[in-house]
Length: 165
Image (cartoon, rainbow, N blue to C red; front, side, top):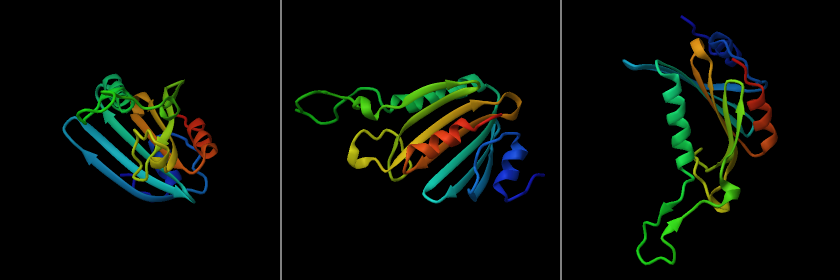
């Protein structure tokens, strides 16, 4: 059984590479159900935090499509929960909507996040982090979800562009 507490060893054990130089492993957890096996880790370097989830599940395509739908639905127009407002539709301004780019084995979203590492932030006063969310299908190795939170965009792009199955 693979039990290293070193971040680079964990990534190598998963069979992936990611530029996490200067990052320190904060936590590692496993969760197993009858239909999936999930391993999660959290690492930090200065003001940048990285969360990586490795999921082993039978239907990779459905899992990935569901995750993408959940994220994208946070930014869809919705009806106002308040009666008698001027407009009955609330929509996130374009500047807060995620930018999406396809990669060889997945998709990467660049977006903003709140102080609790949450997505769906649509107002300047709620933005705490620049963030990147990538979901990658590494076939037999599993599905990898990478969430990066930082004060600036440069670190996010560097980390996301470095991912390889």
